[in-house]
Length: 342
Image (tube, rainbow, N blue to C red; front, side):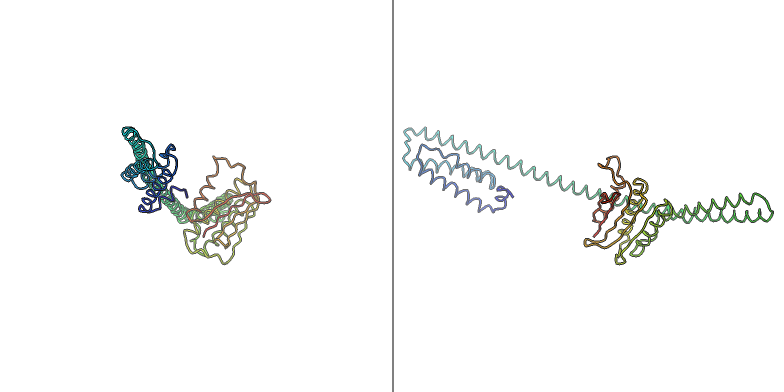
């Protein structure tokens, strides 16, 4: 903290007493010194203190007092004043000098206060804007999550059921063609197989868009199914490890952790070309920790500015949870993504 900031915290009576004390001390030294030595500059300390920290009118009072003490000290020390006009002129010059200093300091003090008020207003407006932006970003994520769930339900309930009905109709057609010993029965069987593959794809999309209801046990279940789905879909080894004592009771926290893991795994497969991925959920000293470790190509150094949208989304999800998100290179290659939430 600066000297000026320290003085700002002092009470006005103390500052007034300090100004009078400075004038007294300088006046005594001025009296003891030779009349030829000019002490006007030292009285400015009291004048500046009075004008800046107390006010304009007290600065004027200290200016007049400083001139009077200086002249009185010189007179008491035997300074020759042969002409009263010279004495008057010197007093007027010194007083004018002090008053100019008082005026400048009070104006500067006014500008300083206005600038401080402006900074406070701008800071408050910026804080409010940042808060509104964070709320808007969180609302956008929540809307996105709701839309994902809605699309997932539609895929499962509408398209999935429609494809299932189509597959049943195809099976009926296959049976009829088989009963008539027609060669088209093979084509009908192939159509049914394609429809069943479409059903599995639809279910996979639905699970990705709308995972299981996320709660304390649902997060572990969801991450386990995510690992299994990635292993099956991308033909890689994706494993899930979890400490059984990791309770996640908040659905929002669980959903964000799931999406972070989902994004990290997707990046590892599509961008890192990883063949082995480990999803680990555990309890650490700082809270719940989610780690996604892969043996892929790792992050480019430096990370291109045009890339990294997924990383920014994951970091933002972590910030919503008041947590931390880091992505680093592994000790033996690959990428390590860590999200820790309290």
